[in-house]
Image (cartoon, rainbow, N blue to C red; front, side, top):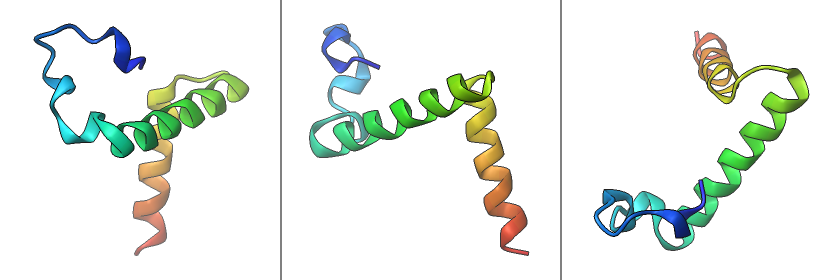
Length: 60
């Protein structure tokens, strides 16, 4: 997500998760997820779900 394209009333403009250093860190994570998804030929959502599933199965 390119934060510079957010509309004036978009809540992400003021949400700490999408602002400053946190926003930059989250953009980097999202970019990496997209790169992995592209490499595997799947969607970013599938990569994210696989990661969550792997975390859960590794803790039990």
